[in-house]
Image (cartoon, rainbow, N blue to C red; front, top):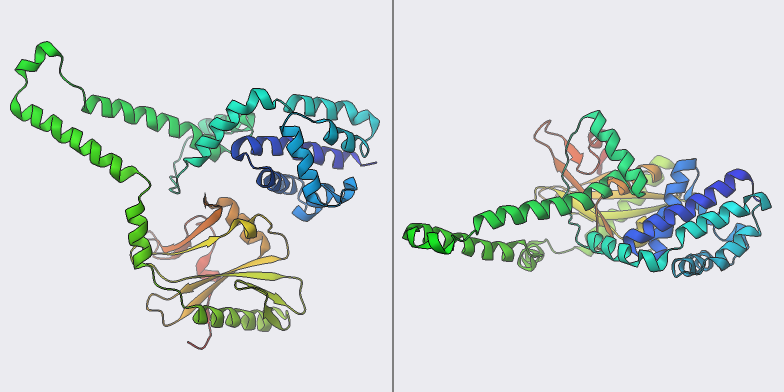
Length: 369
């Protein structure tokens, strides 16, 4: 039988899974995020929590457990309840039943899922920071906890609705047409101004759509990839880590990943040239990497110099990379990372994690150009 602490962890997984599932409507992703939450709360590794979800339940794989979670979301909690009760003391069976019964409102929650999915789908990549007084911050955190989401996610949902409402009010004032009895008093220049506003609104709609033209320009001006150069850079990273961390000989496990003879660690290598249009370096880490990140994974960010004559390495250990991923926005399943120089101090900072000391940790990488 499981100990009390393990039982509490499993209950927490189910509660967090349900909250995540309502927002992204994806069983795998919701379960992975729930595992990360529990690991962080109890200060254990995600692998330990993942192991509890299948091996300690005598299941052959974690996908079997996710299948039970999916059945629960579709209104059938009994298979999940049955297998959990086999490993939980009888004194806790009532708690299992109450949590599952409380959470299994699929029919009544389908509308919530749809609304959450729509809000999640319309989120943009742009980030806005703001400050508030401690009392307001405390209230915000309480509201987020009651909703079962992060404060940032709660604000994202609420602010989208507020901004949409305020924008419509402003637009309505701009486009307000004079009443019939007043129309004869409207001057020609006023009508011309009103037509200009209508024309501006029409153009604004074109501009604020997901800008395919901007994407095309971005793609057309993007520096073409030099795969051979990137391969040499990955080899240079391997040599650097071998010399400095004594990890032994290395080999390229895939196009982006290094593994080492004397270490269980793997290193994900991401390369970026400098973008003169955006004045920054930027990388994208795919979902298949960051969602399965564990204590054996490290991240190597390669930043080409502005003239392309040299390259620098920013090496983040496992926990540093995990911390960065949590702060990053997500688009198309990728975690977006940006590095740029800030005018306030003239130093390089990660846009998503300004507290990280880039100047101290970035190294010039020696390689054959």
